[in-house]
Amino acid sequence: MKPVFKGILWAVLGAILGIALLVVIRLAFGLPAWKAGPAVAMGYLFGLSGWLLGVGVWDYWALGWLGRPNKQYTTTGWRRYFDFDTDHKVIGIQYGVLLVILFLIAGLLAMVVRYELMRPGRDLLNSAEYNNMMSLHGTTMVFVAVATIMGAFGNYLVPIMIGADDMAYPRLNALSFWFVPPVGFLLLGAALAGGYDTGWTGYTPLATVTRMGAMFYNLAFLTIGFSSILGSINIITTVITMRAPGLTWGRLPIFVWSILGTAALSMLFTQFVGLAMLMTVLDRVAGFSFFDPSRGGNPILYQHVFWFYSHPAVYVMILPAFGIALEIISHFARKPLFAYKWAVAGMLGVVVMSAIVWAHHMFTAGLEEKLAIPFMISTELISVPTGMVFLAALGTLWHGKLNLKTPMLFALAVIFNFLIGGITGVFLSDVPVDMHLQDTYFVVAHFHYTIVGGGIFGLFAGIYYWFPKMTGRMYNEKLGKLHFWWMFIGFNLTFLPMFWLGINGMNRRIADYMPQLGGLNMWVSMAAFFLGASFIVFVYNMVVSWVRGEQAAANPWGARTLEWLIPSPPPLHNFPTEPQVVDDPYGYGVPGSVHARLAAAPSPAPASD
Image 1 (cartoon, rainbow, N blue to C red):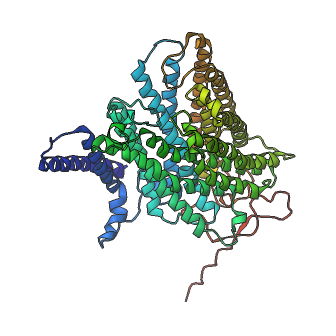
Image 2 (image 1 turned 180 degrees about the horizontal axis):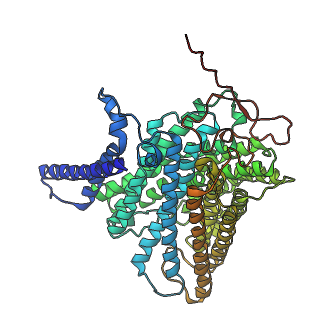
Image 3 (image 1 turned 45 degrees about the vertical axis):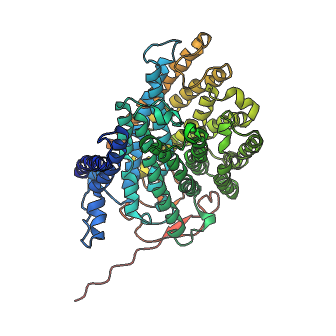
């Protein structure tokens, strides 16, 4: 853990240096020495640089820029996970563990929110405290949903599934992870600075005048966005340039396609939310007026820029879950993936069409009437490519020999839950209906069925499916199924009633509601506590199984893709020899068909006399 402590020390020194430099500059221009907003921004910029240099960029990378030898990697065992390690498998586990911890914290915040909403009136939180708690929950959960599957499984599995020994840019890969821990510190800092009451969307003009915690929110969004862009560039380059011989585009596992589409979305659109956050910071600390109408700004501009990223971000959260679900369904149904090309076309269609649907979030925000109908139509049309993915899932299940292990149960839940989220999304894309339902609990229910019901259930499907590969241990199957049914039932008991609450006028992001809705809110809160308790089973199962679970076979599921051809967990460079891909990864039922073969390792040369 030495690099982490070194990173913290360098971060503190960097923040002090940045603030001191700002004070000198302000004094030189005749300004007051201290102003909190600029000090936080400058201190964080220098502190983040110090953190990255301290955790390993200086030792393992930057020394080479100065003509000096870089430090060599010598850390082994569990300490690797606290070091600037360039092995993509270590980085994948770093992402997974850190973001699952953040997910559990966000869930605890949700429990506090639901406690307050059990009854009309005030029980635990006043209005400001409620808004702060709700905002922190939403922001943390969105960061988790955006980053976890691509960061954890994308890093760990994509190189192995395409037959590569690592990512194209290993040090850049490590750098993209070490941007993430400061995000957690920023969210904690936001709470300590009085919180922020803008919700996870950070709308202006409130975001430019509210508490200093909003500044921490802006900086957190900028940081995780930069990490996403770096990771996306790495994944796209890796898939394009490092596929094994014979691994044509038509033989690429569907999970890799989903990660490739997700990386394209992140690379193309994350820069826009970064721009929105940067403009907000400049309005707060530098006197700019992007969003101040009294000085020529336009607050609606923020919504356009923010949602131009944030609706594609919905698919950043859900496309990898689709890939996991289709991957698992084919292997556990023992059938070729139905309509493989249509499924790929559907994912790519989502990538393209997600760029023209953002303004359906703004039907009630003063959007020009002549734009409402085109955005309504484009939003409804995006159900066509997502329907192709559903077609592939249902066709694969039809007459399959289903093996209902825990990963398969979660994969099936992705399809079921997202179907509800997709159908209810059609209502919200319709202008007259959206006028009634906007900012009600109907939107809350729809959003959670999409992101939690689809994305987070897909995350757990992947955790259970690849847990043996990543740890070399088997989890307890009975506890896994208990977790699934507990979580699945609790999820639906919690969020289905919210549709009724929204239709009957309960507004989201408000700490109180009409007394006649108290009975159903009590039900929802009790169901939410029931849902939250399910994760105790998950944590216990994962921790105990990782420590002393049954030793996993190299291929416990009998699957065909490349990651199952090597030991569990994989060796350092994945493959002893370069794999040769000879067929598609889902050729079940075809006699003698295999996806790939490993060439025999060359015999050692005979010793000389």
